[in-house]
Amino acid sequence: MRAILGKSFLMLGLLMLFALLLFGCAPTPAVDEPTEPAVEEEETVTAADTIKFAAVMPGSIQDADYNTLGFLAVQDLGSEFGVSTSYSERVAVPDAGRVMSEYIDDGFNVIWVHGSQFNDTALDLGANNPDVIFIIEVDAQPAQTLPNFWYLDRNFYTGFYVLGAAAALTTESGHIGYIGGVELPFTRAELNAMQQAIDDLESSATIQYLYVGDFNDPLEARRSAESLIARGVDVIVSSVNLGNYGIFTAAQEAGQPVLVTTKYTDKSTHAPQNYLTTDLFNFSAPLIEIVDRIIGGEVGGYLKLEYGEGKPRATQFPLLNVSDEISAQVRQIFDQVASGEITVIQKMDAIEVR
Image (cartoon, rainbow, N blue to C red; front, side, top):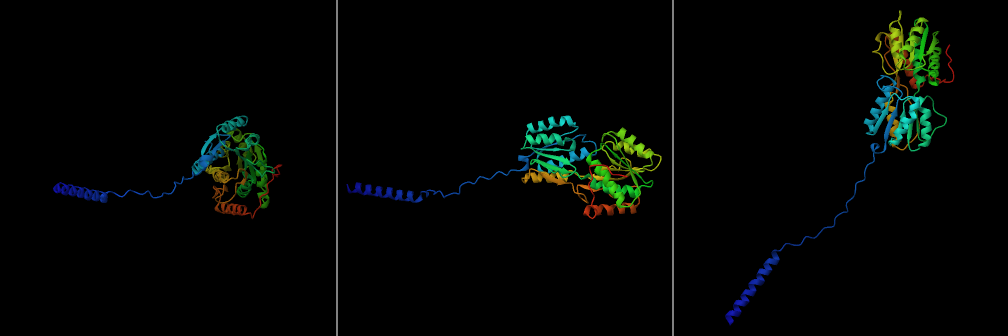
């Protein structure tokens, strides 16, 4: 009996010892540590999320002139901000309302009309679509504005003062020609700025001007140039677009040296022996500035194309086919206009050339 109890106590002791060893070797239960609540990252709203930009242009984007500059500005804008862009070219004035309305229906909320002939249509649509921002081109600061409109002042007349000075210093016959597309306030201002430059130089040169009736008619522009050349004009200041091809042809075929100035883009390759300079434009920089300000909350305003070295408006230097002395003199006048030392007067109501 004692032997049995001894064995039982021995077995019980062994079991207890095993249990203690097992308990001592058991892993300590993990205690969850408090964790910070997850913070959701705020989504960044960019221009690409909020702006759809469309441009309406009157001519071909391959004109190497006004419409090409508009196309390049749209491309540069898209690259700068990553916004969705679209454009329509060769839009006739009667079709402009339909084209802009279709853009609005498609969700485009910033519309640039590249040409003042579309302004009336844009103003009508803008009054009925206050959530759409319109960019229109003007030739003077408007007295009244709409809150959802940006007014882009092209500032034509300032550059034509310098072109007038270049023509007055270059002409040997004393007869300067001007060829425009249609008589408009800005073309009258161009002519009057040229006359102011002639007067400031105390030059005896005179201006003879003709309007073709179309900015893009090379044949009629050529006929106008031939008519002016027949009257003794030896420097022609052009204010047309595709019509320049006709003017250069007339200059090349003239029996005497004839030089031509143009505007918008460098056209020195068209007729190298007959090219003087160009009144250069850059629409990319001002368009990017306007959209940047729209992103910043300015849904309307006024911006003038500044004139001067590195600005959206500038004269091309050096002048070609003239002496270095004349080119330097015109460059000095350019600098004086850019700095404000020379004030160019804007006269748009009537032509006052003599």
